[in-house]
Image (tube, rainbow, N blue to C red):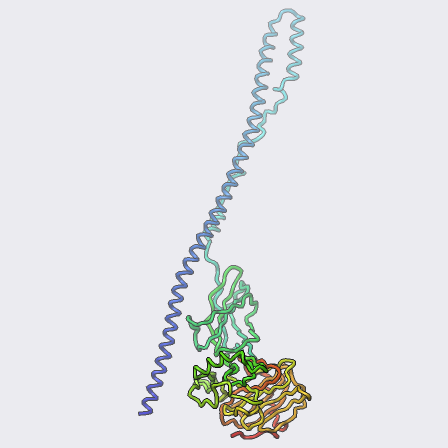
Length: 508
């Protein structure tokens, strides 16, 4: 019966996943169909604009050529009209002179005849008819303004759509996720020397597999990538996965997107649990500050939380498929109020606040930075059962390193009320590495990755990040992967057990 139920549950889970996958594909098809309609309309409008632009240019060229022809016609006409007028005047004067000369032949008186002959000779000498050029100044030829658009027609007949680059192919094997950076590598399916640059888009998501159309996060864009890989660095991994896609661009147009790739980007994310803090601590998300007024400014918010009767805590449990821990927030309102649920969780001189995420398995890393004038603070982990008067490191349920800048400066590791002085400088930022399954808690200089101290302890209960602060404040950085340098040190040094044996134990 039980085996059948388990089999049926697996079938139900498989069907639910498949239905979810099909629904996401339906959403993708609907969005693609909508995109086809919108993009087709846009392309048609752009095509009309391009042809209208061509028509406009042709009209302008035609108008310019017509004006050139008319101007040439007017110039030649004016030249010929002027020459014609001169010829007509010369002809008229010449005919008049011819008539006078003809009449002069009939003069009988020699003296008058001689006088007339001299006049005729002088007038012939000065006659315009003998100074005229009888060659037209311009010809009637207009062939220099003829056109032949056969080549242009051939060019117009070759008009076609722009050559579009093919979609790149992202190679998941060559992609790298490490140190809160993601390197995405791709290649072109065939060589294309017209490609000018690439565009990469990415977004965070909590869903594995193909990107969801209805994902709540928008794509972010990295433009003008010249190579075939790109690294996003300094990321906060506050989602389980990231989607990536790439498109190639030539000088004119962008091609299709590559098939999207989903890369896993899990990391420990937590905030400080305001409901677990001492009344003299002012807590907000990833910051805590000592407040000598007793946190009165938060009373109304605290009471509101207390009246709800429940708070939220995150558990890190093994993933059913990969075995990698994943944060999962669950309500613990039914837990005993002595453990959580009110601002008297810690009191007295236990100026403590815990994280809202319980670590139950896996390896995790976070960083802490103290204010410059902070007089005393501790950083570590503790079981949920840490007593309300207990201070970090003074019980067998908590482990920490403690910095004291009051009266005398000390830097020490603490557990079970035992102290190990640390002969190293206090770093600006402290990195905390917790290997729950390996039973190891290590502290590092977050900048240089120098090991400060390591605890060896077989954790028998889930642990919570724990912090104590007095006369100052702390700020946290979460959503961080375990740095590669820390992983290497862990493998090589195995926690430097020789220097930490005085505080190592098996905790109950």
